[in-house]
Figure (cartoon, rainbow over the protein chains, first blue to last red):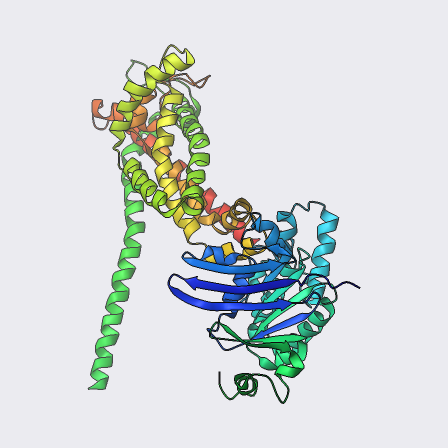
Length: 254
Length: 296
């Protein structure tokens, strides 16, 4: 078996907002069909890093990047069809952003934007995605009501369903659990373990234990620099390479 | 001491509440006051003329020995000019609002906004003048029609006059949609156009509807420009290029020539009541539409 190109390959990525550099030359690779955890305190550049992946960083005026970002082998920074790129990456934001549409239309939004018209195909897709996000049983009877009327936790699962709706190759979750109760969080974590058979998952989290539970490999990002990347059991084990890692995962600082 | 301060605060609170209440109620009082005054001036005519003929009759000959007071042609005139104006103005106005809010750069936007505000500030008599001296010859040469001051001329002017309002209000409505919606839609792989059409327009629909309505209101109520540019000929138009006459223009043109208390004078006030009712129905309909949308 030949080793395929990594799902994400980032070399020396620098990102600056105006003059303020927030990512200082980051390099790492995410193997395909793995769960890759990114941990680190607030303001360490985790969200900015994700925004470089699907080029939503473009929306921020004055943001400049350098280095290489490759997604499934393709160079992201020089890519012209960003819409195609964004369809390949599912993105879940920390606070749910329910589009002002019905539950159904929220999930069907991306497939429709990508050109799916068949009602039966959309129906199937919506149900599958809502089931995968552990939301189907709660909303099956009110697919027509506004997505923004759901509770916070339900809305977050709705955004997960939506992120899955365009069948992404990579799913990025940015602190997805801060608006969800622990029980639902566990259910979604189970879902993620299932999903990583068919896609690569990048899990940005404040909860170091969540990375420990889920991630195959974990990266510790601190102040815009990679402190350490490695197998999760090493980072959380007795002897990570960098003492800062040990302090952080044990809650000594951060 | 503390109690006295609390007492003072209570009084101040009550006073402010009362003040605001008066402001709110005064709006209602003024509307009813105006309606009452206009209706009182016109009401005596109701006994002298046949209401059915007034509303549907095509003959408006107020100064003959056997005067006829049918405003059917005027109603058709007002509605047709407004409808044609809106058919031109709504796509342009909302399209421009979307462009200014979503697609153009910061510099272009600032320039455009200044120009659009300037456009809104042009007095209607100047528009009428443009209709007479610029549009009319253009229409005569461009469409080979005998009369340049006609329905189409008036409609274009009304469209030009209502577009700036639609752009301003429409742009505000679109700008009020949170950026997180835009980012979420774009992050899902939607193009900018898909984002506008499927997310922003539905999210801003109340504001956009308000923008259109203000445009309609401006078009229905406009007097001077249509008086100068539509030809002011009382008949039911058959083509786009027939001269027409509107309710507002008739009041403006004829009220000064009537003697106070004459039937003609009273009927003109009835036309005022009619205009009032049309505006009321338009607003009410829009309100219901908005409520209907919200319920979904």
